[in-house]
Length: 54
Image (tube, rainbow, N blue to C red; front, side, top):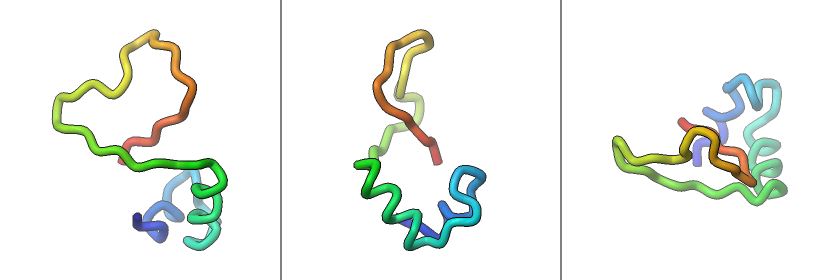
């Protein structure tokens, strides 16, 4: 994962890439890939996690 890229996003701005990596580890972040047109979440669906689409 490109932690340098993520450290430039609004969510992680100001955090060093190493800090972003540590935060994502602490949050038990995972990476998932979806095909074009594939549904990630349906409107109104109850979710228990946060998603960031890059």
